[in-house]
Length: 491
Image (cartoon, rainbow, N blue to C red; front, side):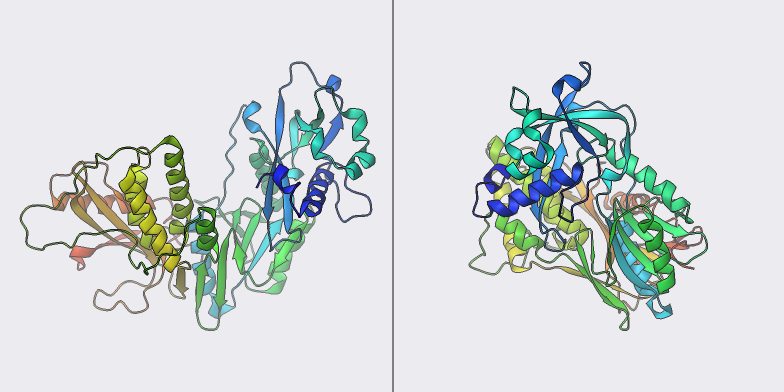
């Protein structure tokens, strides 16, 4: 629901309060409330804005966040597409791979006392100053009578019905907000001995303490050995930021962790993600349980003619239906990469058709959603052990349309693999499932191509490991070992 719908709903009073809190947080606060102003914006007259300055719009984003102190949240974002910024706007952050590496590192060192806590910086973007001010306008209908009285908004409403603002600090939606806030955080943490590990910007370490953490924008997943080490990082952040602390370390960037330190494993999942996604798309529970995410054809071994899928020539869906298909693919792809690699093959084929989807694409997607409805809470378990990266890969020759071949790579952390014993195999930190770009001439070329592709896929990420073992499934006796630099993830 949009902010306009929420302000007219039966919970209008709650959402008006959330809107007042956000405007007060961005300006000078609200008297007699816990809301402290950040002086990010100031309300001005339109005549005070330079004629050459660009004026952008405001957008209200609403969400229910049960884990936050303020559960009904309104965030005012600005239209960054209307503003021009010369320079790099990319901000380094840890990804899913580095998050899984950190989880493995913590549980592997749990026997030596390692534990996890998570931290969150409040109003992170609002802490950075802009090199030059920006300007935006907010419609007067979004200011409550209470807020208008406190800030005398009626005196600043322009003839066009808008209130104009000057932006002095970073805000959500501003192109340069993320990089400015990140650079400020780097400078502040450097004063206390923290810096990114070599060959990565998402995992940080201290120059003397054993503390390490994965940093994703304003969220920290911290590996610590003693309370005093953890408190050192907390105190360093509190000198500049207002933070929230979760000593259980159960939640990080939408992922939930069930730490079993004494048993030597941690379970990672995304509870309620699929249930909410299916409710969003009004997908009903299937009448018959679906245990397969995608259709498949039983292979006939020994057949001389290679099995090839026929080209699809069905009518293409409408533009609106195409957008729905693309939205569903994007929603489930994040879930697949995070915790459920079993649906990657289905998503890989469906995403290849999402530019021009057909009725068959819709049926394939419906089958996938039926499978997810029956199995809504996939979980990956990471087991404590030597953090050595192992990769198992395989390819299927000419199994995709246009004479292409599919390949897969299974990346996990374990001791040097025994080809006769696969007990206690660890959960994957990454699963590669795609189609070779080149048209290969034989199954041998497909196998060679997948070994190269999977090794290249994590070439930058394996630097923290002492060994990389690549094993191609049909030739288990042949192991390729790469000697790399010592690991910064382990002491």
